Image 1 (tube, rainbow, N blue to C red):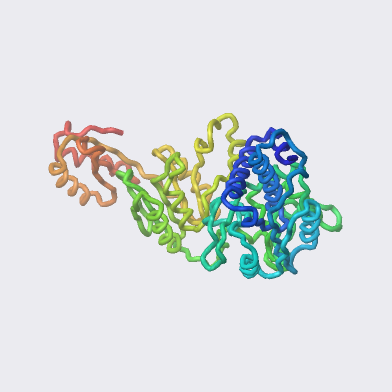
Image 2 (cartoon, rainbow, N blue to C red; image 1 turned 30 degrees about the vertical axis):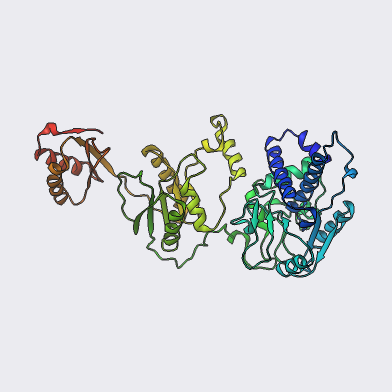
Length: 478
């Protein structure tokens, strides 16, 4: 099989991994369902084109292995029997229609042409055919990918079938690596600057691929595979005749409103029981939630619509089971997925300092619309994240840098009862300071912390506390 051979001979290790994973999903589906029970929804786009050739390779390998074949028989020795579904639309590009029909002819595909909307067409088709599973070219970045896995039952209200998504974890970069490596023919629109093709009413060439012209000739565009940032592949999905300028389009972030209220609000969510002590000021609400995905999602959902900014900390670690990130993703109804384009960019910036897997890449912070996850595990990292956040948001004036707090901590072996009354008196005497006490462990020393903006006031509070005890009762620990 020419596809499998091209991938095996490629030096692209990531493409090989994605290819092998996709082939596994395809072969798994073919083992679960008979050929009569599976179909492939083909629309002529780049993702769909990749999946067509993956299905050809997957079926070839599945059939060869099942028959205990050896060597590499001619491609024509094994025909491709999977049924193809094409939903033809009057708003489709003529180039898409031509490419689809030419492809069907070239590979002798059994193609059912449906001229109804997707849902009605599926209902009619599934009544007429014994189809139980449909291969889809859905990727993580697609709006329809929310909540889907490689095998996902159809949504409530739709005809029952299994959605099979072999390329769900593929990135824009992976799609083009496959097409170019395997020298697969694709729709000509992608050579004209189109990076994500919908209908003729909502798709234009991606402005990021525009080639500047010195004269008034027709604007030209570079091919889609030259798009530098795959996350912007849908930048051409705008209303073709809309008067709204391209610069006004944002990626899920609200446009700047000139009548926006002057008083901005923020809330803080602490996740988990590892938060022992801390101070929070100038926020509308501070809440602590359990260290599980549903609790985080519910709290984020409550706070993100009520405040301009929501800061979340705690519950973040180096494992795939991190509940904070998963909880925020659930609150926004999106999938968690590695952003491989950003990872490559980050590796380029870090260079030799970057070693190991992606979990060892230290990203300063994670932002999803107005929710910001602080991933710091110590004070030094938190300071760096805060500086990054101030710089990142300074242009919007959504976050104003506050005067830094200074602090002093004292440790004592006094009992909680002995320390409680003097501490309460000190708090009354110095209302401008934050004064708190906690124990690092059940039997450990009591740590008293003084925080404020005035070092002299802090020193005065420490002296006042020591006067109420013998000086040796406390020892300064920072």
